Image (cartoon, rainbow, N blue to C red; front, side, top):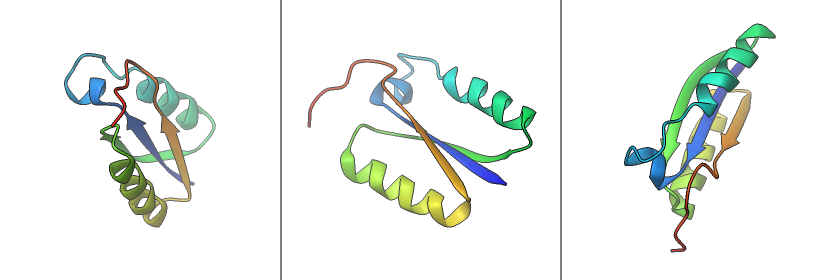
Length: 75
């Protein structure tokens, strides 16, 4: 089964936080037979998140979303 991981956060995009969550999630999924097709990182903007989810859901059967890895400013 194909999986895409979407990580959310401006802090990831600017290099303030290193995304170790996706690596760990990918290892766990691989161990149980899932194939990670893509990992996508998007900004904290609502529309960017929704677009990424819509596009991912057209590519894979499972979409996992992770965030909360750093400070989020309200837009």
